[in-house]
Image (cartoon, rainbow, N blue to C red; front, side, top):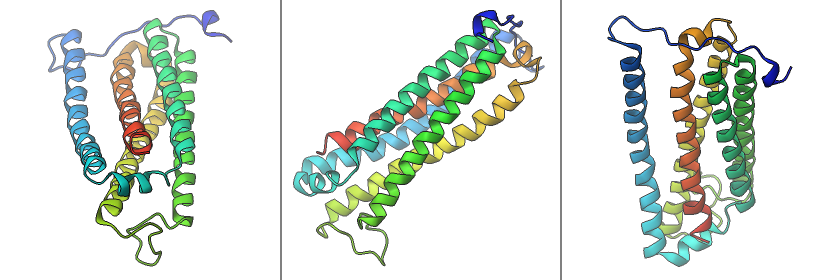
Length: 221
């Protein structure tokens, strides 16, 4: 059945007792997620800043390391996450309109795209392992020149991308759990704001990768 043929459900928010109004509860939830996301953004910003400083101070060593990264996988994953942002935005829009089944489909599509990203990233890590591009493994000699700048850049790449993958995996697990809860008929009448708040987290994950891709894959090439 198409979304247009679906009977809209009533949309609402179950107010917790310690909030004076539903609107105050919405504002508090939004402020809380933004405060947490800003702290996470500062963490990634520090990693990206060090990578850019390395590029300025040691351009040749960083360029040699960056050219071994799988550009096509990074570009494809960027497209995948942008598409996932679109499906997450669709889920939010459907939740506002009370179209629960369409919202659930959009949420599952978002989780599937996130899973595709992780599969591609796992393949890239495997290729890096096969090509001796993991300087932190003592039993596999690093393929490039043993310069501190080169090793530091590659290590930063793994820390930043693995941390992003951890955030994405956590987001997928939460999204699947929320999808299961949202399958109940009374979900939108009580917890529509959960979709709104979670959407901010998913868009944050996408934003981090949109920053990581040019800094790690493009600028240093």
